[in-house]
Amino acid sequence: MGYPDQRFDVNLSILFTELPLLERPAAAAAAGFTAVELWWPWIETPTPPQAELDALKKALDDAGTQLVGLNFYAGQLPGPDRGALSVPGAESDRFRANIEVAADFAASVGCTALNALYGNRVEGADPQVQDALALENLVLAARAADRVGAILLVETLNKPESPLYPLVGAPAAIEVVDKVNAATGLGNAKFLLDLYHLSMNGEDLSQVIKAYAAKTGHVQIADNPGRGAPGTGSLPLERLLDELKDAGYAGWVGLEYKPGDRPSAESFDWLPASARAAG
Image (tube, rainbow, N blue to C red):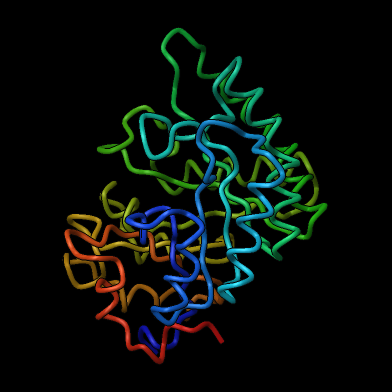
């Protein structure tokens, strides 16, 4: 058990950001990792030119890295936005325009998990209207994911850092997952369990794992406080990942932490080099 017993991937939207996007897969590979994940890389557009999608696929392939998680278009992230799918008007339209683009790109690189960030509450918009729109868009996203053999992920964030995001407790995200699965009958909507966000919410992490491991499709970690590498805060991450494994979770664990003021490649000293390549 312990860290060497996990399947880790590196989030290239928070680590190696000192490098241009197309150089990050090779940097992750040089650090010993064979699996990576990404937020939607083109924050300005849900429909980038095919040449840019092809260039990213080539960078992943040339590095020998497997993309195991990809966000749908989520607005300005990093930045003020936390997704687009529940935001009425232009942002919802952008999300819809992105669905097939993201699904097709995922299929082209063998990525089988697509994360749909819910989006913030909007001043003047009825929360019930936003939630109805969200369900509509999540159903479309789940069907597109299913078409390419992927799961759809729904993520809980944390209230201190994302005060306008409505899914700030594990039960809130699970409720959405269940609604999407009920609407589609596909069963491919899953919970993205992020131990950092849940800890920032003050949730009982062991209890969340026990209750929801069976509905979890992806896990992300960072230590708390600080959102740094494991060992920089006080979360018992190694124990919690063991609890997830004991509860039946056998999927990926995304490293979604900030490297601090050192180069990303130097932030992995907590993980033996022999445990970085995913078997």
